[in-house]
Length: 481
View 1 (cartoon, rainbow, N blue to C red):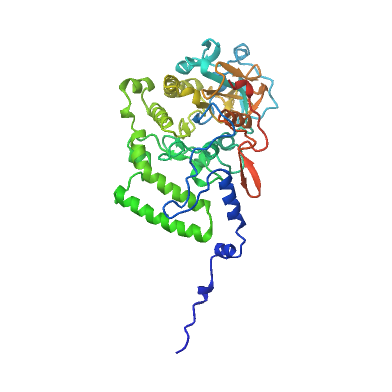
View 2 (tube, rainbow, N blue to C red):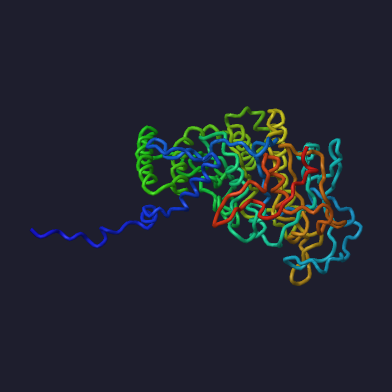
């Protein structure tokens, strides 16, 4: 009987398997070493093919902050109308300012004084605009950085710089770095959650990407315009399988993945996928409780107020209580703070949407004993010009253009020295001149408050060590209590 000839493809094996058999899978060995160094490696078994990379981990030293909530004011709020008073603008109203060499995105004209009133608040006397009366009541908890600066007056690169530490290259976001360093205190919820009502902002999920870090550290997006859990979190429940049946399916999938990993060595993408499946299963019960604000007493809901931003802020507090490590709350997907016209009406309306919820959050965290361990960051991607923006015909609709030369953010809680104003812009508020603070400095300070030396929180990728602050960044120690 003639011998059957095997098909030509029978002798072929996948490239990865070929390299593994040849003892040349150095990338896999490097990943295993890295995971072991960071406490994430564990013996693979059929029941648990990989230990969760989100198990809680100790930082470099004891930090005051254990969790972060970032209020992102999409579009760029005006610092001279919110947290950086400039009385000189009123004196020079309608006059040209000496800034011919400073490039703005659009044409601007004369000095435009704020239409709002600033007043000192708290024992510190920190000056805050009257569009934020509820936040102003907590002036002694705030550390306002008035000397921030970015790199360009454009939204996309400035969003990436603020959220990911690089305006050009694709990099892991701040939330991804924090969860990579600290893990999570609740294995039944995502460690990093992003709430942005009405869809994605500019640059979409790049704003909360894991970049080259394992995918499990990426932010989980929630469209907070919805109130029903099934719409808040897509595919949170299975429409065709019970929890018991899902558990059986996951156990089978885990065994198959375990065999795959055993044959090919560790694969961070597969491990992230496994963790995503397991997390999705566990979330079905935990998320239903965390996102249901009707379980809060009526007086607490009234304290936060009405509307989307009140609800998502209250949800955020419930998530922080349950061990979520990093929460980013976006104020709008459509750049609502990008007020090139009618800044008085627009900034007033926008501030009203978030002022009461944020003031309530600070008070709520304080009375629950959580504020000192929760770092709050508030701000946008850049500021706005102290001069009025002009149309092509030279007229104005009384708005302000983008300004990356100087702007303000503030932090509270988490070991921050409250009642502090750090740095300064010039007398008109156009550019930072005193204690200039880069976005890298801000990130270094945040990591320090969480217990990390920003130069040591690194991840090896493409042959070199990367960090959130790139090759710069200094801790603003005057802001540390």
